[in-house]
Image (cartoon, rainbow, N blue to C red):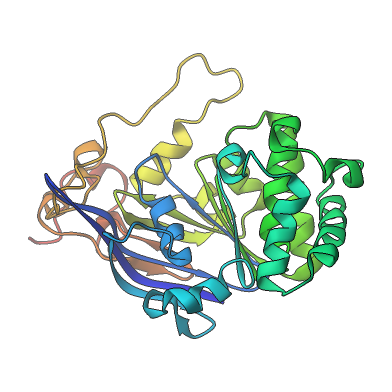
Length: 329
């Protein structure tokens, strides 16, 4: 359905070029949930905004974003307008900035239907009530006449989802849709997304930093660091048997029951203004080797599980020899 191939995104600035995404490759199949995880600044949101062509004009995009065979990166803006909303929907992180505070919720949903499905205003308003009911908004007839500030946080996020699915898209991109919500409401939103997916066999591309969410809903996970996809594979395999030290660090830094001390990853991500020669994680890694400083690791494949780490090299020795093994270089 969606195939992001070797995506590179750069932003020219007055102090240099920011290399926000570097060679990212991610695919989504029909009915599949793919989660992209990583800390802030890793390139997650820029990757999905590239799919929707929502980046600033100054952004330089290279690579292919194939949607059912069409390269979205080369489509005209007019052609992209028929893809957005109709074929690919998007749910943004903050519903208050995604909704128009001066328009009633029903009209905001109807606006999509009038524009994309060429419905009359009367038909679209009637359909908007049905869509609000579909996403679990109580008393949808009355609520369609409410403004966003009259909704709770969870209801606002449901309204944003209602707008995103109004045209029954084949793929839904959700950019951290539960970040600003409490745990109970977060669970309700995730259940809603799963139910909608089952109804229509919709693909779901989920951006999150919450590994608990990934373990609950994702079929596949891609871990991003410093603009690169550094590990990717079936969600349970990556979470239970991570290969890349960064993925291990993310899992170890999660608060655990009965834990008295957190174990964060030391250091900070590299400066995205520079193009590192070796592995971008080498300065924070527990198992640095000489080759890590000198050569960027390719993606090593182990079935469906891939990892951009020299520890995945077929000649790599495990455990205590990781620090000294240099693969003959």
